[in-house]
Image (cartoon, rainbow, N blue to C red; front, side):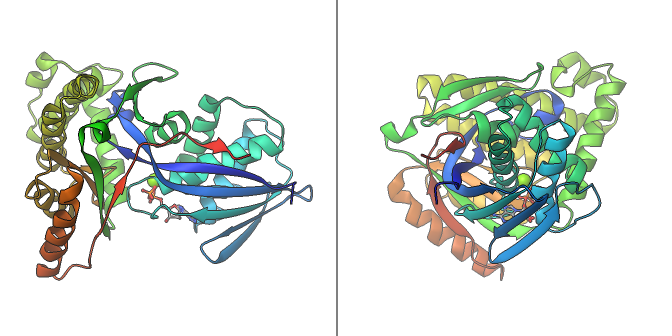
Length: 362
Ligand code: ADP
Ligand code: MG
């Protein structure tokens, strides 16, 4: 059918720079070759139908926050935010097909919201910029779904380039996006994802709590964004928890700069070391890791990974590891054994490659 338009929308892996977007700092994600396919057809009767994972959801285009609480809220939130921004959404049929694990910390939510935003913007002939669509997708999650996420996931999905990481700096408005070559493959390395399969209940609450803690520390120090903190500011903090949170933000910002330099120099030992120390900081100072992620990272390091860390918001989801391809089977066996020994369900281990941003298919 030639009235159906199709979009390929990637998930993302954040290489380093965790919990920095909401602190006005820098992050370094790649888009990955696990993706969402959005097929979209215009309707003019004020109805939106969405098919995904064997289910169908329907809602009216004048849907409002609070009307929906299941997965369809992610799509409905985009319709609401687009209309609020003046885009004439008259209805649509949307079919979603995904190779991206859902809720695994690889940003299936931003793939969905950004994909629906691109498709509906296109059907309406609105031609909003990707910056605007990123914010619309973020509003859908923040103000409609009620997930207080930063802007990194949407920017990764909409601004990444194949073969590159995208260095995103949220210290400016709009954020700056600069591609950095990510070509460890040329030097005989792969990036593996260990999807722990767990999603701890406290994830959303703790995420919001960290945001609040960081905002409070910034205001105590008279900073607009905590990522602007320096050593003097850190040392002036007296509360040990506040100091630990701030220490993560300060040291992680330094690691992102180091990781960008290491990528440019193709210094994989240095790059790997930064991944691993990022994990320690997230575990010990920012306190957003969990046993499953720590075990996955340990298994990776014991499989000759040059570096490994949790990726995403934490409390479950996925870890990543940079290692030689011939060690991936060892990693899989090792992490499966470690999980089995603790009576945890088997994790999923697969490799990912840096991929292009969301794009309309011919
Ligand atoms: P992540 O973005 O890391 O995958 P989130 O918890 O942010 O995890 O988002 C996962 C939620 O997004 C799911 O619980 C579901 O409501 C929604 N979602 C994501 N992808 C899809 C999809 N393909 N079909 C239906 N709902 C989806
Ligand atoms: Mg998400």
